[in-house]
Length: 300
Image (cartoon, rainbow, N blue to C red):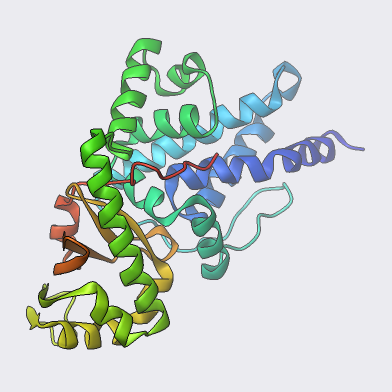
């Protein structure tokens, strides 16, 4: 077997892991595949005989490539790039497609991808590599070019932002809110008008910004029946939605493939929802304080 064939075969053994790392760092399969392909190009130009731990070397490289992409994206203030054709001599990466990306996003957790996007590039990398992939802080620090202690602090800060740690009393209140929100989502998914009425306060008020409303103008709906009809009509969104903390209260994120589009900020009183604020304006979305629910599990 030629050296290039051996190298390509060895790289393929690590491709799935590298895509998983890059996807959690970048939140886009297309960008993740670009990062993996760039990693292959760097490997093909390197002296592989000098690499003692190929898996560790590749993980470090794909993390550095992803970090540069995150920083560039942040500076440009733009969404992830569209599809691009991979290049290189390694076995070609699969073409990214929306359906596959949605499946991968769902396996990671839509809410987690959304919350990760609120972190700085350094925070995101420290959290993902250490907390999700168990990379030692010393190795993460080498990727970031920072001290081990500074990297620990980055991961700790990211951890606090990703998942809140409420007091026992607050946790009990959030559990109650979650139960109500889950009932609302279940009724929306099933188009169950009676169940929606049951979970809404009789005087519930729904407000939506101009971006959220089909008319392009802010909208206000009042009363359980009127709001329930609107919820039934938008039931399709529930399939790509997850619960999360929105400004400290349980809310609903509509984020197909992990790309946030709409947030429902809920006000729960007792066992019913008394207010729903539908937020779709990008400027308002950026100002939201988002976090995972306290009992959410983080995937590896």
